[in-house]
Image 1 (tube, rainbow, N blue to C red):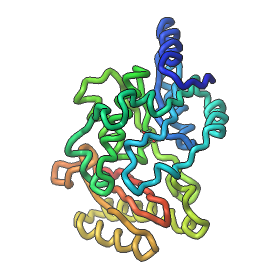
Image 2: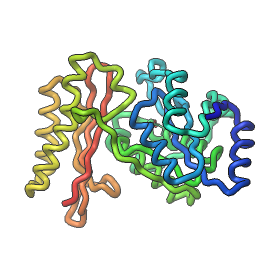
Image 3: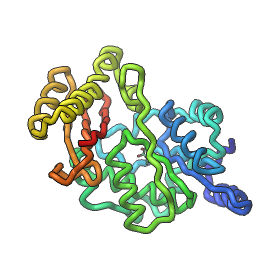
Image 4: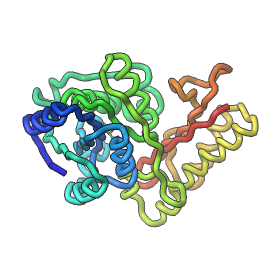
Length: 282
Ligand code: PAF
């Protein structure tokens, strides 16, 4: 696996690969990699001849008071993990490589409407930061395929919308959430949990599953399901941002035409903000 930091090195390698007709997959990450990322690489490999992984802690997707400074940076460990996972190239750009005109003057890519819902309403500007950096990575790597995790449900939906709306020539593949044995979705932010908090954290997934079961049993009072679940998480010591039942295709409130509901939750536990979701056919 090659590790590079500059656009020139990136372009040279990519053109070599493209020159012999190889397909390229991109797995964008912020590092501190775990088994969830391994699965993104593995899925990338199934869709392409070469897998490029980027590690970039993107300053513009963090709000004021969020964890940009403390976000775990573990590049040496990440390199070992990616070699094992079979990545071909690790791209680790500096901030001024990604934002050559500076952060203030950076061109912003934004997906209105979807970006303001759910996590977007609690983290203003977050999804603009995500689409802005992902569009740049797509421009640099020009991948045939890019792989994102289902845990970040709203993120993958927004990226798919951006790609469709801008006619970007990249296929978006969404990888199933990888979980610990007790159901907790893998996340770099799980590292912020104390042992006691870690023991409570799987309650988010259990809460989602309980809602899923109620939906399967015909419950359709979505407001009540949201209220009960939010209160239940608060009782366990979480500070929930939301538990929400939405139509899976566009995060709208489910109506009679909606045949798949996504149940999403975001809640703080200690210093960690945890998110998770499940989809339920109805
Ligand atoms: O999901 C992430 O880790 C980030 O939001 C992404 C897609 C790498 C953009 O910085």
